Image 1 (cartoon, one colour):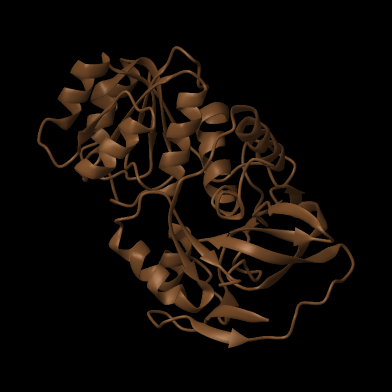
Image 2 (spheres, rainbow, N blue to C red):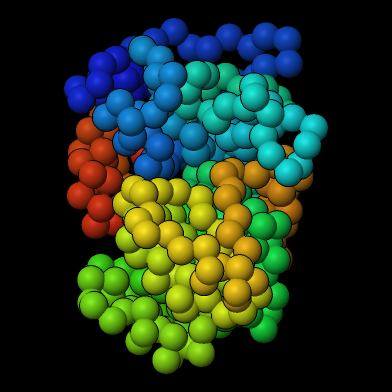
Length: 322
C-alpha cells in the first residue's frame, strides 16, 4: 500500500510503498476512502507535540470499507473507565499507532462505527476528531441549552466550525470570531447570528452589544484575547477551552471570574459514548461537515502547506484513491 510517512521534523512527508497491514487478534484492516488533516498532524511535523515517534503514518480522521461495510473510525484509544478525564494510557490514532494517511489502516475492531448514511466519504472523514471534540465541549462540558447565546472563537478550523454547526442545530444563537471577513461572511451564511473580527480593538464590546453577552464560550486560542472572553461572559456562564494556539493568558484576574460565577472548563477529545452520541446527533440533524479542499495522497505536502497558511474554511481532505 501507499502511505505518507513522517520521518523527520521540518521535512516533507514521504510517499512510500509499505506492506499491507495484516489482521491480528482484535485488530482489523480498513480500506480507506478518505482521510482528513488536523492541526495535531501539523504540530507533530514541527516537533510541537510530546513523545514524537518516527517513522510514523500520521492522521487521526478516516472513513472507509471494512468487509463491504461503510465505516467511520473512532480516533479514541484507551480512554479508560472515568468519563470525566482520559486515562494515563490514552492515545489518539496517528501516533503512536499508524494513522489514516494511507490506503489501508490496521485498527481495533471496536473503533469502527457505521458511517452516517447521508455523508459522502469526504464529509465522513472530516467528522471524527473535530466532531468528538466539539460535541464534548458543547454538551458535556458546556451544558448547551437551546436558549443559550454561544460564542465560538477562531471560526474556520474543523472543531470550531463543527461546534458552530452543532450549536445552531441545537437551537442556540451562535456568534463567531475570525481575523477574516470572508470567513465571518461564510459562517453567517451557515446560520451564525453574527461575528466580529478579533483584530479590531473593540471586537469584544461589539459582540456584547450585538448579543447581550454569552452563556457559553468555546475557545481554542487562549492568549491575550481570553481576558476579553471573561468580560463578555454573562453571570453564570461557562467558558470551555480545548486549545492554546495563542499561548499564555496575561494578567489573569480572578475577581472577574468569581464575582460573575463563571466556570472555566478544559476539555480534549471525548469518550467512546460521546463519539456514538455525536454520530447520532449528526444523523438526526442531517449535518454535513464543511470540506475546504481535497488533495490526493501524492499531494500530502501541498495539503500540509494549506494547513500551515491557516486560510482554510473547513477540513482539508486526503483522497488515497486519487
